[in-house]
Image (cartoon, rainbow, N blue to C red; front, side, top):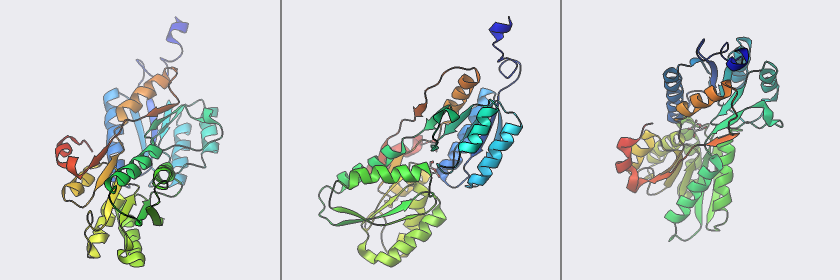
Length: 308
Ligand code: AHR
């Protein structure tokens, strides 16, 4: 009988709900708030006791939260790391305590990948490539030079590193395109606007395209473009990533040209994995979310069914 219960029933399942400690990046974007809602709702629906901690975009807060989850001896830890590096020590502490760790959304850069069980999230490199492919197609009849300004995400974060990489991989093969400025807007509207103002001040009418690593920065930048007396979506082509409702509204208003989807609704999938990991089952090391690209011509039809 003892062998049948496998020692797991005393840690959760029928006798006691599974406790999951989740450390979230923050609330920096529409994407992130949708991600948080999805995780909270899915935990409730799955009967998982969730200890949720908001790191306000600071790695030190996330490390503290992970240590507190270890001290509380939660059953499973999951987190979306604000940046890629600097996790080895705390992940070793979790491993020594026998607590499995699931990485969500953003990757970690560790030498020993046994420090986490799985990574559930988007393929950010592919998202960058999709943005570039969309741009090349949209501008197929246009002569060069085509000047691009780039609003990067949070410095050192997986989506900022990967979306830049994927975009360059594709765009650099077309000699008409040139990235003339590239700076971080930290994934927020306020910073996106501020950095775009600086780009416009420095480059004037020299900017043909804005590539933003997320919709929120693009929406902030659109405001800066309008305040500079230019028409976003016309004088400056704007392409960004996420596919949040705000981006669809901007596309319907003709101010954003395209958005590459990045799905934040990973809560149900995460809870499923938490249960499997807790039950000692093997799960794939990498779980990728399916996504597509939307432009202005598709925005009005797709808007009513958008869930975030
Ligand atoms: O890690 C995913 C990224 O983080 C989203 O694209 C962005 O909006 C969020 O802040």
